[in-house]
Length: 85
Ligand SMILES: [Ca+2]
Image (tube, rainbow, N blue to C red; front, side, top):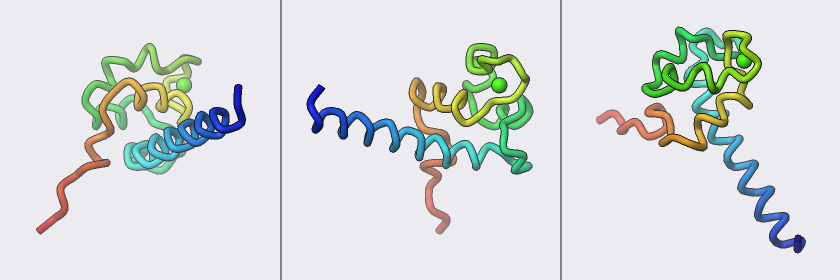
């Protein structure tokens, strides 16, 4: 792998995590640092994929688990809310 390609790959990885982090904080309503199943209900589609995404089955989504949802779905509604007028 060339250095340029490696850097591009790393940059893409980091931007994915940054975007996932923003939506993740928005969903973590009680700021507990994890997304509960109740908090997940705020994002359409997340509950349907819950069992797949909760890889360790602890009943909460870590930011890493949530990132898998972000990459396969459109960005969270919170990300492109229309500005208030
Ligand atoms: Ca989990």
